[in-house]
Image (cartoon, rainbow, N blue to C red; front, side, top):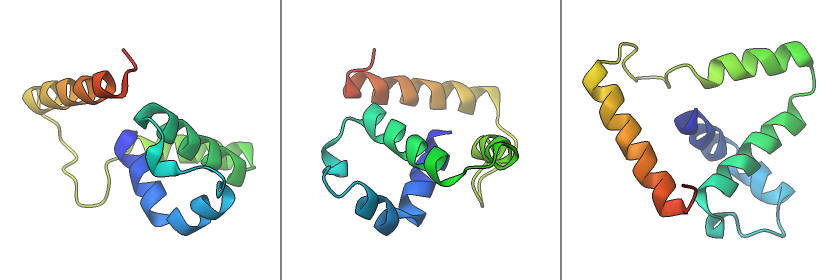
Length: 91
């Protein structure tokens, strides 16, 4: 989900920065930045059925990423996520 939100931010950066011009997005804590991107997505996707599709796709692997995840890689990714969240002051 996090990688998907970063991908969305990258793809739509000019639109997002124009919408939130009063906020320095790069100065936000990581959790607030991701919340803002998620909220922007909710604003632009109005249809409930489209929102459900979006949520399902958000969990899908990004293009070029392996679809199979080993137990070891999932563990490493989980540890990396927790480290990032700790740095962001969320835990």
